[in-house]
Amino acid sequence: MAIRIDGKELAAQCRAETAERVAALRARGITPGLAVVLVGDDPASQIYVRNKEKACAEVGIRSFPVLFPSGTTQEQLLETIDQLNANENVHGILVQLPLPKQIDKNAVLERILPQKDADGFHPIHAGRLLNGEDTVVPCTPRGVLRMLKSAGVPLRGKEAVVVGRSAIVGRPMAALLLREDCTVTICHSRTEDLAAHTRRADILVAACGQPQLITGEMVKPGAAVIDVGIHRVDGHLVGDVDAASVEPVAGWLSPVPGGVGPMTIAMLLQNTVEAAEHALS
Image 1 (cartoon, rainbow, N blue to C red):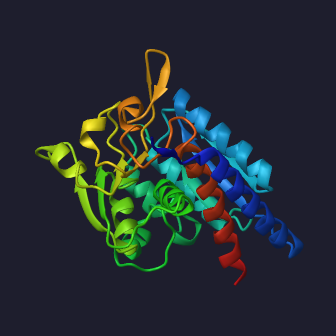
Image 2 (cartoon, rainbow, N blue to C red; image 1 turned 180 degrees about the vertical axis):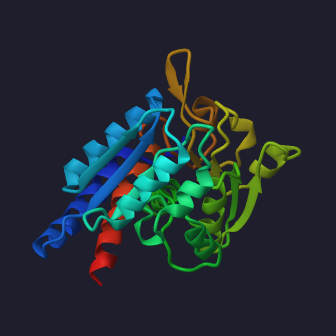
Image 3 (cartoon, helix red, strand yellow; image 1 turned 135 degrees about the vertical axis):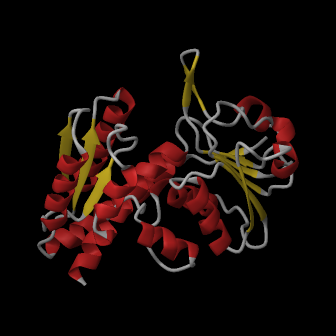
């Protein structure tokens, strides 16, 4: 039976560490600030924004929520990004995705100053991460790696399979695991015989966006399985992993809910505090 990697408990530890760093910054006259920009009225996005504001308040980070209607133009949004870039009280900027179809996501993300990019999505950070350099790491992959290390999962030389190739999770996750000396395979919707790949994995990260796609027969016995997905199915929250069939096979398993989700927000707070620390240096 798999050991459960409790993201909720680990996130609480991370927030406590962050609160200490915030206190140290405040003692030097700096209060870290995070601006969260939301365009539209998507209910899930609104919940995420509220959760982020609450988490900021818990550790002493100032929140700067910026809410726009769904009909906002790209020019209006870019003008706001420029204002946030110029605001010395804002150390981190996050634009909640997805954006309405009239707005070019890449143009918006590239407009954020790299030193204020709390999400780590700027092309400069993506390039540095791929090059194995220190940089701002996207929050979810950073949280997944912290979970693996906290659980004592061996990484060096191990086979890692990432299911999903998004720029937000899949690709940066693969780059992080490669940096930890894993042998990495990225699978996606066009991969032939997905199970043949996943059954080789010592570390399996499911970030494919398909409910319960990964079943027990697709998992190598003793593997560490991290479930990044979250979906509501028949009134219940489930992930990309069929936990009931995978738990008896895997060595480690992250739950849904209470796994990666809390860690993503915890890493966002850390990215923001690190941006404030760098601004002082």
